[in-house]
Image (cartoon, rainbow over all chains, first blue to last red; front, side):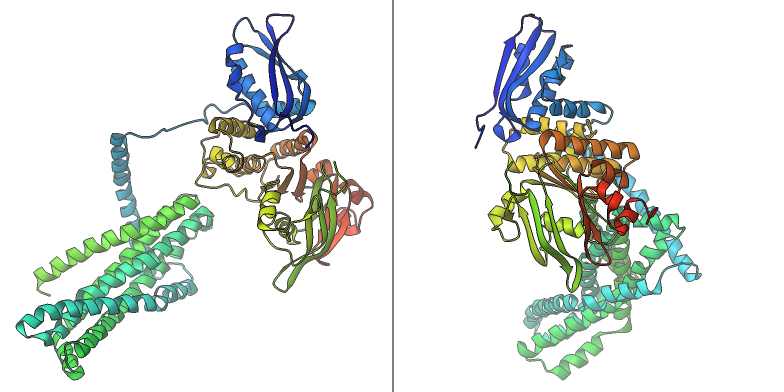
Length: 378
Length: 250
């Protein structure tokens, strides 16, 4: 290749001791391992008042040269040394002038730097303190929106509701089936092992039926929906936030809350109880399979025992829990989606945080409801 | 300079499934050209750009860089050719989880093996060149639309590419910033010999910076004019003249 010789740099004195001539030669391209601008720091000392460039032997250059020269210019500016660019190629002079045309925004530069452990604890606490009112605010908006719905003043498209219902209900059946079946299986084995000790294997039916209908069906469905639908809600609304779609609703005077959040909340509150029932049914089927094949209990025996165990109140408890969990998942998903910032990273954070919030709240709600129902004797 | 043209497009056709966006595109871009791709909305300008830079395989035809057929080259040759290209996407496409400095530094760190301190110097210079000195630590989400565009240009020219492909440089910029950007583009061509392919419908830019162009027609799905935009304005196809005069004269 022609002119493949590397860069050359010489610092020559001129006739005047106050003026330094920097001679540049050879190839000055960014892939040439060019010298750092501060290699000249030592020479830029008194009595030098001015520097000039001599680019007579320069064969080839790109922004590697420009970066070097602008680095030197900065050091010179700091020491009140005048820089004369006129010895550089005309194109380089013009580009350097362009780079200098808009002064650096001193106010703009900032560096929060890494925080100490104490500061991190502090900002996490503040974040939590600021987060709580936001959550309550959102809850309040949700209640107002539901009231508007009841009074028939909430505006959203029925089609959106149906699409959401289809997405969160029927499309969740496969995963709910698999998980409920396996959990039913585990429950049956666990119970059988203990009940065998007292020769009461038939009560596997009671255990599985009451366990699935009252608690596990709702809990499993809630957790599946949190991962599946809650994350999706947060990502959808978060992406809308990034695209300013939510602002677009606001400017049209359409409540983004009614339009986006309400159909999602409704869809989950309608579908999660149904999924809970379905989950309980699948769990009982798994219990039947285990009783039939491993513990020699007949189909009819298992069926009658199940019917005997299930009272209406078991269903009421399971359905009430399912509805609450559905509302929690919708709440957490929509809350985190609406709070989302304006970057791809923020959308990911919103989705993660929606799932974590939903599972945390579900667990808290499950504990409270279990204790309350026990105290009430339901 | 050698005799083989810098970029040569031969009988190129682009399609989405059965729908042919453009066909029969034949043109040459010489080194140091500012080549303008013109055409109305939806005529396939951006699709052509994607075929040029290796993002979307054309349905037929060839794109040659210095005589080397991009779409029939092996993965390594394609990688080498891509390294010669700098691309500015329509929306900027800055990586939102990286600061401006990190956005510009990534190609340098990936491809040059320069010391971090040198990379920082180059980043600072490139950002200064687009008028964003001091914004190194900002995230794209904290910038205005015009600033994002300029930051994206700084990233596109991070490696001093031979060829800069720019989709809609001045959309969303105020007239003065747009003109400064045009000046910068011309200066890059004049001083560094960068070849520039620009997709735009900004009339002021087309007529002031372009020295070669094609016009893509959305009805006949092919190009109906090539050459200097000023010539196209004076005695080009009536449709092109209409385009260049905002429908003023037919």
